[in-house]
Amino acid sequence: RQSVAPPLGQMSTAVAPIRAFVRATTTPTTPSARVSRASRLPIRAAASTMSAPMSAGEAAALPYTIAPPAHPTYSIADAIKLALEEDIADVGDISSLSTIPEATVSTATLLAKADGVLAGQALCNQILAAVDPDVTVSWSKLDGDVIRRGDIFCEMTGKAHSILRAERVLLNFMQRMSGIATLTKAMADAAAPAYMLETRKTVPGLRLPDKWAVLIGGGKNHRMGLFDMIMIKDNHIAASGGIDKAVANAQNFLKEKGMDGVKIEVETRTMDEVRQVVQLLDDDDVVTSAVSRVMLDNMSLDDMKEAVVLIGGRVETEASGNVTLETVHAIGQTGVTFISSGALTHSVVACDISLNIGT
Image 1 (cartoon, one colour):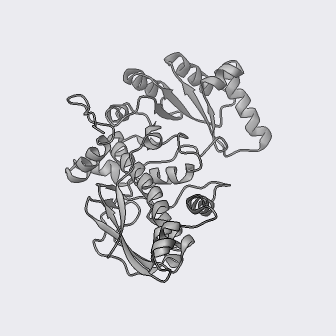
Image 2: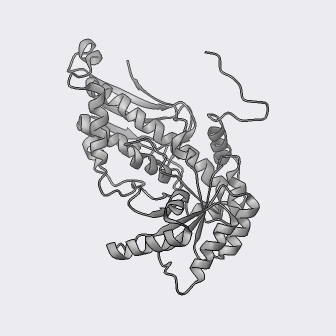
Image 3: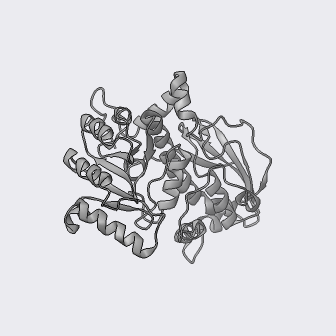
């Protein structure tokens, strides 16, 4: 199928984050830029040699290089189990069963076929351990490390049946997570001094791995779901009868439920709505103790700058809407605390990685 080139001067969606990543990791930055990013990015130079081989069971028990976010009910082990089961059903891998003797032992490598930020390495250990804890693994790159096209960054040895049963599942997770981490790094670098956040626009069932990849790429996590932060958006405001009523109702709910640690974010779309929130924050007769952030949704750069000045540090600010790799730098210079982008997870381009068994 013939591909269609983007208009002259416009970078394709698939290539843009890769090119931005390559520029960010090969072009010297100014001292001030290095300082502004140093404390927040996990990206680091990685060893070029393989680590000592260990069983997948042992590797899966190692401390995380970059820990996943917390979730009260989500289980990574269950997500892995579901992914493996949907691939073999109650039958098995009939391709391997029919062609490879069961006792065959093979060595396979993971090859980077594109530049990026590796994410999913720790998850890979857990997948291999779930399939066959006796498979041995050796890594030269860990989560958060830069990978370059042509890098062989993992070697695994074990039963061929085990490696091939795990292959597609581990690649699906790793390619997606690495794509998210790569785009996150490119956008986080451009957004400084603001911090990049993802949204809830994740693949159903993969919320935690998607948000984990954002952390690995140097971003920060927004709320995990509908349960850990109150976000008063336009529909809540409309249904409750206004910003003031929505905030009052939310504050009362938190008090009644004893949810003292939960915060409230209020979405605003106009400068008039920003002024309404500031009025509430300044009114001693109105309880706003849980309001910690104001979202500036789809505002112009000038309005964002004005809103930041008007809010004056009372609470955090978050820019949202029309956030792309091309617009994020200018948004980051408006003074907002955070920039959220659904694109980090809802339309990411997977990082090309392959698993190859030696002959």
